[in-house]
Length: 202
Image (tube, rainbow, N blue to C red):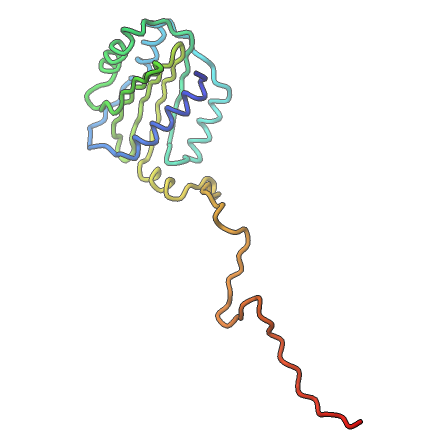
C-alpha cells in the first residue's frame, strides 16, 4: 500500500478520535515518540524515509493552526523486517512500555490486509496530544500532534483557512439578487398603460 494512502487512513482515524474527547489526565513530559521510533529502527531494522519540505509544513501549521492543530510531526519508515505472527504482541508491549500512565490507549486496529494501527492520547492543559503508529507490510508511520479540541470543533462546523471557506458551496448560486419588499415578479410587465386617446373625426 502506498505511503500516501496509509497517511490518509491514519489522518482520518486521528480526526474521528479527536472528536470523542478525553477525561482529565495529569500530563507529564516524556520522549515516547523517540522510544517508538527507536523500537522500529532497532527491532525491525526500519529505514527512515525523508519527507521533502516537512520543515515548511510544520512551520505553516504553527502559524495557521488549521483545524486547531498546533504542532505535528511525521516520521516514515520502509523495509521493516518482522514476523506477522508476533508483530502485534511486540508492538503492544512496546507501546505500553513507552507510554506512561498519563497516556490512554484509544485505538488498536488490525485489518485483514495486515495493516496495524496503535493510538495513544493524553490531555495537556486545553490541548490534546496524540501519538499514532501505523504499520503496513514493510512500511510504517509514526505521527504525533498537539490539537486544541475546541478549535477543531469550530473548524468542523465552519472550515476556514486564512478566512477562506473550505465548505461545499455547490448548492448556492454564484450571484443571487434579493427581491425588495415592493418589487413585482420579474416576469410581469410593469409599464403603465397608455392613456386613452380621443377619437379623431375623419
